[in-house]
Image 1 (cartoon, rainbow, N blue to C red):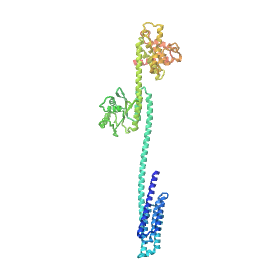
Image 2 (image 1 turned 120 degrees about the vertical axis):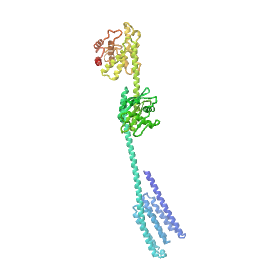
Image 3 (image 1 turned 135 degrees about the vertical axis):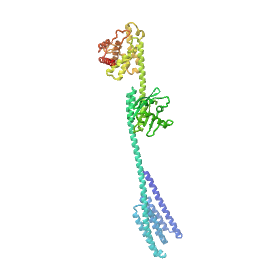
Length: 599
């Protein structure tokens, strides 16, 4: 702003300088005119007075600039002309009319307001100087014909002219000032209106940005919360999708939600909320094959190109990626007509994993007046990436667990194939019973699963026992029995070499599953609370199944009652008391369940 004012001041000073140059030229022209009028006579006094007057007129230019400098300049110019005419009259009385030129700068002076003092001085000077000129140069005037009438007429004429000049230039000044004020006010109002519009626009923009930033921050915070929820459900994809679908419904206020995941090149609806079955059926899409089904085309477009598609009937927002886009979009909305409500808006976002690959599509439907906003769109896009990573991790974990369980089943089958005297599914039954006991005791789910797996693999060490001992028909020698006892340690060695088992601590339970609370077990003979609880739970399950299930060598000996009696007698000796108590509670629950099934 200061630089603009500075530029304006420089321009005004330049204008004032130009005005003084014009006046100086006028004085110079007057001197030339006087020279030729007097027949080439040079009046040095007149020249000096002219130069002094020019100098005086330039004085305001060198003062601190203000609007008063213009007033003073025009005033000095008017007085200078009157003074100059006074010195010229002595050569010819007609030069008195030269003083009338003073009306020109005087008229400029009257453009400004508050010039009463200048005007008064001007009139006094004008009349006084001219009257003095007439009286001093009366001889010259007498030489003129009808000098008395001439002088009287001249005076009257001057007075009338001065009055008329005052009236005219006052009117001009009033008009100019009013016009100038109106222009200034109009310009000021326009600038004020423009400034207000700009200020309002900027304020509105700032408010929108602030509102957008607040909403986006809230959505981002919500994404963090959703990520935590999804991470906590990492072992259950179905629960993850339920969390994701419900959050989408609640946060973007969608009327219906569908989440599709790609499995074996087929994009299947895995989570559905408020979408009719016919629509869900149509959404099942082949990822690697084109389809004439319009819904499938939109899903494949989002999945393959990893783009967001937004279709809005009210706002005429359509996806332009297809040929005949308008027709395709219309057909798309028409296909959705089987919904229980009219679909006004659809938002489709890809689910992308950490490698940048599409693993699914999120679809949100809307039939409300409130449309999906840009923040909603950004939220779903961010969620599609964040959720994609966690869902992909869950899928990978599921595959690992499936492979892990398949490994367990393979080991279990290998044990049963190796030991002909082990009943079919003995290891599986031991694992399941051990897990039920652990659950009855209130152990954490992770510990229950760990005990179940260790129960299934408790005899894995028999793979290292020679067939000549395992398959021997007759009684075993003392040495052979000692070899059989090594299966616990051999199992520990086998499982310790596999990280998935080692990291879960499963080999330890396999190692100690023949240890006893009283220290009379093998292979280490540990006792008391040094005996892992999980190993003791497996031990009681193994004892029960081994005694109660018929084997080739004890078909007539096998008895559930016998197994129960032995376990009761070993309470506090071989088994922890709390383990025995939990075992019997499990048996009671099994009996009640079987009884209900039979009924």
